[in-house]
Figure 1 (spheres, rainbow, N blue to C red):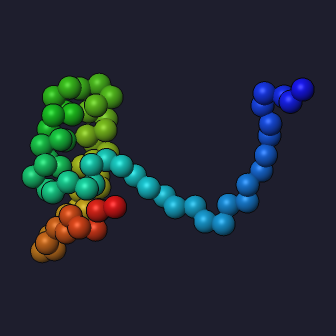
Figure 2 (spheres, one colour):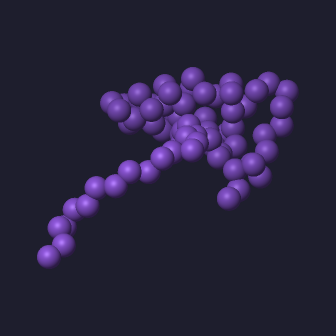
Length: 72
C-alpha cells in the first residue's frame, strides 16, 4: 500500500520576484483600474494604493510604454 502524501525536496537554482498589479496595461487603463478599485473601498482600495506606488516605475516620464514586453 502506498501512502497518499509523499514528501520531497527541490533545490531552487533561481527565484524571481514577480508582481501582478495590471502592469501589462497601458497608462490610461492602469489609472482606470486604480480608480475603480478606490471606488470599491476596503481591500480593493489597498490594492489601488500599491498600484499607485508602482506607477512611476511602470510609466516613467518621457518613456513610451511598450506593451510588447508583456507578451508571452
